[in-house]
Structures are given as C-alpha cells and as structure tokens.
Length: 259
Image (tube, rainbow, N blue to C red; front, side, top):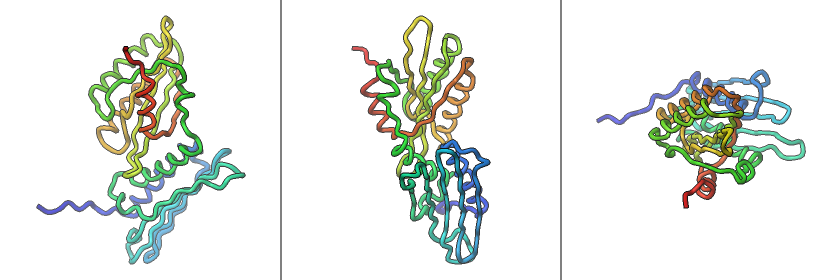
C-alpha cells in the first residue's frame, strides 16, 4: 500500500492561517481588530515574511512568520514563527520563538496552535489563574469524564436544563484553556457557578470537555458553547489559561467527597 503523503499547502493557505492566528492573538489580548496591521512579503529564493502588529492600552504585540527558501517555492526551507508581547514600560517584552515548524506543518491550524501556545505561556507567567482565590471555601462538583463525549455532554444538557429552570442569579462561567507543549493541542475546561434561592451556591466543573484541534472534541466544545448561549439569565464569562495538570490536581483535592 502506498504511504499517505499530506498535500503541501500553498502560500495563500499559510497566509490565511497566519491572519486567523493573528486574530486569535488580538482576541486573547483584548485588542480590537481595527488596531491590528498585517503585512505580507514573499520573494522566491528568499522566502515569506508575514508580520502582524497590534496595540491597545495594556498590550502591544508583534507576530511574525518567516521561511528561508532554497528555490522558487517560498515555503521551502525552515519555517520560523516568533511572538513578542509588550506589557510594561519598565519590563522587557515577553518573547517566544520556534526555530522550525516543519514537524507541525501538517497539523490543521498549526499556526493558530503555535500562536495560542505563545499567548498561553505569556499568561502563565504574567496573568496566572489563582485557583485558591477564585474558588476559596466553595463547594465543588466535577461532572463528566475528561475527553469523553459520554456522559459529559448528557450531564451538561441536564445541568443547563436545571439552570434554565431554577437559576436565580447571573451565571458566572470560567473557561480554562490548556495548550499541550508537544503538538500545541488546545483543549478547554469549564466551571459554572450554580445558584438557587433555597440552597448555597456551588461550582460545577467539566474538565477537559472540548477542544479546537480534533473533530469530536470540537463538536463537544460547540455544544457547551451553545448551551451557555441558551441560558436565560445574564452570563458573565471569563477566559483563563492554566496547565491542565494544575487544574486537575486542584480538583482532586477540593471537590466534594462523601465520607
């Protein structure tokens, strides 16, 4: 049997990915798209040079993707991205770089995955999620099974049915992003603050219940987001970056046990 050889992407396809990755970075840093500028340069025997810059009151970023072409194919040779985020006049910018993306180039959305990895590491260092502070002395339940559609999605439907019928306050949602260091796979966990007039508030977690980089996980992620959109009370959602292992360890220690 002939070995499968992935189709090589065109420079138009790679540039489209670069634009999508830039939009993701801007969204992650709360920079409006009108404050983002993207430039595209392609030269045979030299390579590509895609450069994006964005600025807001709190952050400034520069994101670039370059190749070192050996011939007329501008995508030939080493492909290297870098991301710089400035956050303080008194500190050096955060910077992350990859010498070569060749081993990732056949992954879907490989540029967005790498960009997410860059911002993820920035947030781990400069905007860390303090779980002890966020959930201090609160009752915690864990629903679903990580990375399994069943029973996770069924339990999500049941939870949101109850929220829509009995929830008495705004719904606070924490959406945790995890990015794997190897293949830059993006997955998500959720926490929902559940309220009822006759009971104490409590948190329900769905750990690692969806992702962006595989079909099944993406379907689960979209279902969770649709359920959140269906809520009748006001929803306040906050996005946070955290290593999944850190969140898992916290939940193992703090979830409600029956003694």
